[in-house]
Length: 116
Image 1 (cartoon, one colour):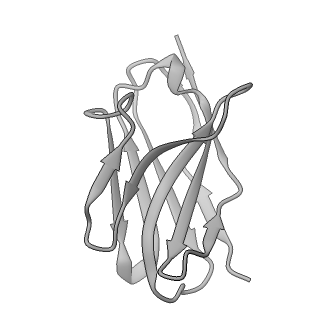
Image 2 (tube, rainbow, N blue to C red):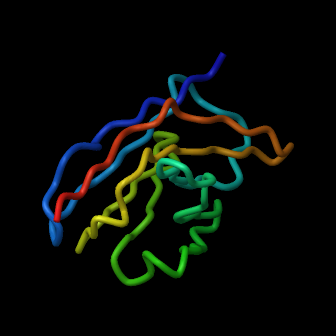
């Protein structure tokens, strides 16, 4: 069973930065899209950013220009650099890996808290 291990969450003041990392416990065959989602209390989980195997990226409007997603295919690792953080970015962040067969793998979630 593949596990995704996330790291890098924490407490930061508004305007600060954090970098999230997510690594697979073992190699995943035929990874397609890697992404980050978040879920704030009382809200639905939403896509934050995603990156394809060809390194095409997509971002939620609310984070465009502040967050950058990247991936290391050799390490089956995805990163999320978060700059200019706002209190509304506070949420549990989950990484997701989808392979070419549309199988989804999820991380356990890491808390990001931005204080005003």
